[in-house]
Length: 98
Image (spheres, rainbow, N blue to C red):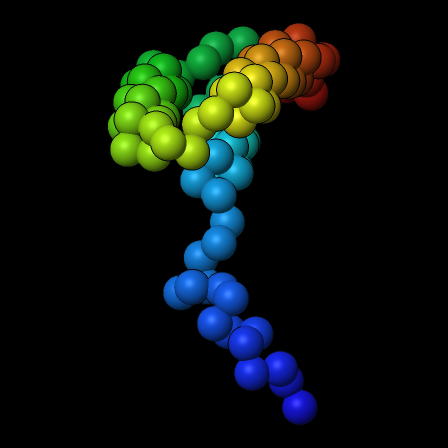
């Protein structure tokens, strides 16, 4: 038997913080974009357009959930962006079988 207050604690089953959702969205979108639009020697122009769209989505999401972004969340967000940039350059400099 489940406790009676189990589902009352989780309002609408969406207790994941917006910062975590934003970081996950960034990681997933970047991984898909890298796989689809980066080649052996070139990067497709649509990749940069999609990254700009992702940046606009980030700005919109941060402004909409400004109260959620305290100092710790901002630090985690910035570190996640830096890690994604590092991984992009790391994987783009790996030897390819083209």
